Amino acid sequence: WEEQLQCAQLLGAPVVTDLSSLCVSDELDVADWDFVKEVVTLADQYGVILCVENGNLDTLLELGRRFSSIRYCIDTGHARLDPKNTFKEIVDHLAERTSYLHLTDNYGEIDDHEPPGVRGGIDKENWDYLLNHLDKSDNDIIASLQMVPCMPGTMIRQGSKFLFDVMGWPN
Image 1 (cartoon, rainbow, N blue to C red):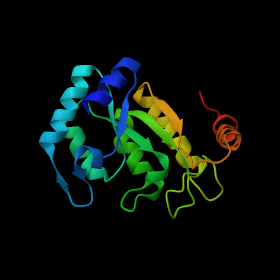
Image 2: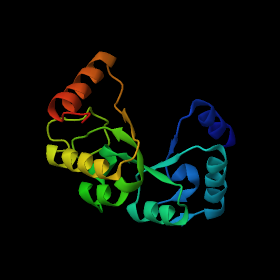
Image 3: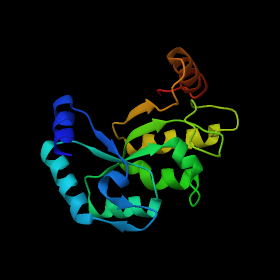
């Protein structure tokens, strides 16, 4: 962790991680909070934003309650597949502290990392909802297209056509 955080500091970049990398299990409801505290303290010392990607919403919110510097990474594909919470509920709870987005879509069965805007994927209403809530938070947000590797030109064309032409990003 220390080397990763030093590298992020040199690059002026955030670190995006998941709960399991912080020794937090959202399935077993167990966590090594002392380890999390060490990592968060190091991130704070290096001035690095530590973003945690969505998992169990209750676990993420507990993490945020315990550590005020923790930020969130909303993975739109994961949000669509969450078995307990709707896409909008996840946005409602995480948008205020979101600093990173993984823009991806899926057909509703598995996290197949399709470009945003696939047929049968996340509907425009939910994309608009996400954008509107993020806009209210006034955070500096980095977004990345997180897709299964295919031809780079295809990924860029499909993703950008949806994001720029259909959604009108950035606005």
